[in-house]
Image 1: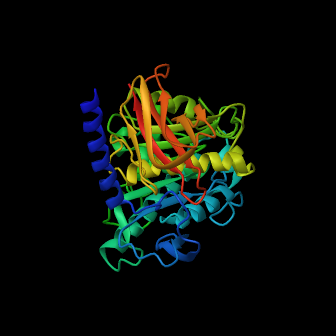
Image 2: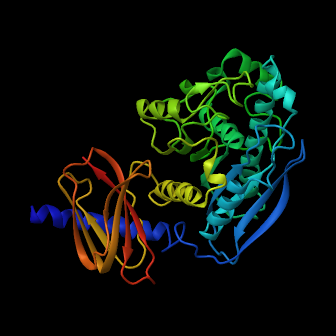
Length: 404
């Protein structure tokens, strides 16, 4: 058993070194940049849609991950734009300070009656137009990387998503793989708006992305999720009347286009083996985090872990090693009966939580370097360990562990 632990320790140290080489200490987890720079550009030369681009001031990294977010507002003109969605604005600022390039986009919207009329065709056409715009925004950065390289984007690490309607937009960008996958009415709408790739500009470049940030979004049909699809991080209140938590008509039932929220998406992810993280807000209605700072911080935390697990491990299947100072080793991983934490400095607290953000084990006032966690009663699955140190000047560490 001792030799097995030594072998695991060696492997974990090698993984830690690899993670540090790919993700500098603190980057993508901590606010390592005190200031950000925001610029506004036109990304769609066809429909003159605008985006705000947030960059960490003074960043010298030559290939940076990109997050593109779309605002909420039910696709209705006047209900929202890139400048007034507090969730999107907050996330853009927070993640830019951690070293991402972040973007808030506008997209085409329509009038209220088009979204809630008895004929669903105008509402479907509107969403397809918005999807076309969302794809053009991705292509804008693909084109930039291939030409002027103004924004120094790592095109292998592009993430898209949004809040409410913006999440609906990018969920369909992420999970519709081809026009043949779409039902006939969606195919018709796409054909009228430039086909599957859309007609919003920046043609000839890919819309390839790595993952999706779904905050109170949905899909027209959960069957759009299939094996091999992109990973996602998802948050929603289970009493949401605007975007149905299960499948139903959105906007309190007035919009006659079916949407399927997290209650239907979660089992589809699991059934198809899609790497995902989800946080359900019991009893909450639509986007509760928009007006509640603790809930917003909860959303921020799960998105942070999700993105780090993809950017810094290079694979959703790899065990994420978030290595900040001081050095910490967690073994064995995967674990079954016990999980050992060995730190170079005194640990103040350890929190183990599941993929939904639910706290499973909490140890406070530990104040020692080596801690043993009994995992024999835990269900099999993926968990996260958050470690805080007695010396408050040390950055907290988050690591992913597997219980088998």
